[in-house]
Amino acid sequence: MLCFAKRPDTIRPVKTNSLVRNGTLILCLGIAALASPSANAADANGGIGLKLVAEGFTAPLNLIPLDDGSGRLLIADQVGTIHVLNKDGALSDKLFLDLRSRLAKLNEGFDERGVLGLALHPKFKENRKLYIYYSAPLRKEGPAGWDHTSHVSEFKVTGNDYAQVDPASERILLQIDEPQMNHNCGRMVFGRDGYLYIGVGDGGQANDEGPGHSPQGNGQDTTTLLGKILRIDVDKGTPYAIPADNPFADGKNGRAEIFAYGFRNPWGISFDRGGKHELFAAEVGQDSFEEVNIVVKGGNYGWRVREGFHWFNPKTPTKAPESGPTTGPDGKPFVDPIFEYKNFKAFPKDPESKGTSVTGGYVYRGKALPQLQGKYVFSDWSQTWALPRAVVFAATPPSGGSEKKWSLETLKLSGQTKPYLDTYIVALGEDAEGELYVLTSGRNSLIGKTGKVHKLAPM
Ligand SMILES: [Ca+2]
Image (cartoon, rainbow, N blue to C red; front, side):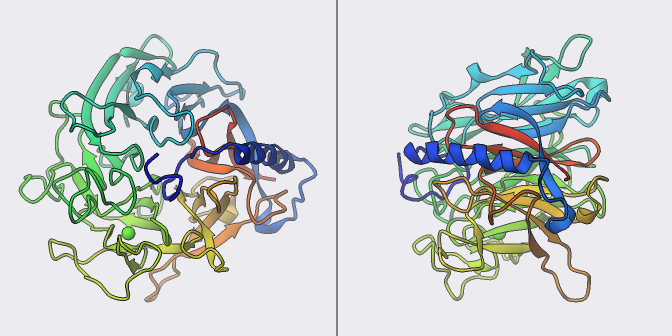
């Protein structure tokens, strides 16, 4: 299928067979070790471990609190089911919502489509509204030959409880046609300004080239929503309004929804709930560098002219050019990430290589793990495409002076005996108290039910 098997540049599952079986076996052993009470609490990082809290998913990509004061969590599986995890630790028998019939037909193997983003309205308890980013079949008006249409839709919960969505309440706010099935992003979060922020990937394939990609790449083309972080006002307008201070609010030099641009696949966007309340966006690189950014309004984050702190040439994706432009097409300088790390794809033998695909996380502001306070906790999906080998990291802000880069440390978790965990980490989640969750899948495909949710906990 296209070049994916050859170039595993994307973040989610691929079709493999015997390797997947091996991977699953390794996962079972690995998680058993992680959950073992004999795990050495005096281990590195002051005894941080993974506590299994739910399982039986395919690829759990979203975990957010059900914001009704009940302490329940919502867990959205990529394949279309959204579940309620009760405070007693049991999954509710009844689904929060089943979107499977509204999704594009998913592949059983490699697929980046599905339910990708989930956010509750900041006033959810009063207005009962929530927002979902999912991959629908290509709409009739969509360009011929394109793959599917991403929907950002509003829904409402029904009944006395807040744990049941009315499927008939869907109001489609935004439709984005996607040329390929990969790099959809779809991560969503509300800001303290009350606006909905939406990460959108560059449309797919590789190197931001090919059908459906602008000559300069979609990331640098402000006339498309692909390769951007958007910001919309869901409380006004039909179907939504543009915040007056969006950088292209008048629509003259770009799409009015754009908040920042120059992204490939910002897999994980989150606001720091403390500090300066900054917006963090992980950015999945092509072959050479993975990066994390602090996103400011109107910023150009470089793709596909830049990858990490380096220039990028789509013709030589594993070899960064030594020079290139310092500004985007509008003359504004590119914004550097806060840190990068080398990708095994371009640097297979380099001791500094850390992964292949960044999975975005959160600045830790919880109570259970004081040693992580103020650090950006995130992961890499896997060090290799074919085998589950995820790594959890924490990044520490610079202490001041002229240093701008955050420093990166690998978290060796309690009970972890290898340089990696025997699983793929597909996403991170955060609860109402600011505690973090690691969402895993034993496979790089949408086959089976190896998806699990773990809490980062003292251990
Ligand atoms: Ca960048």
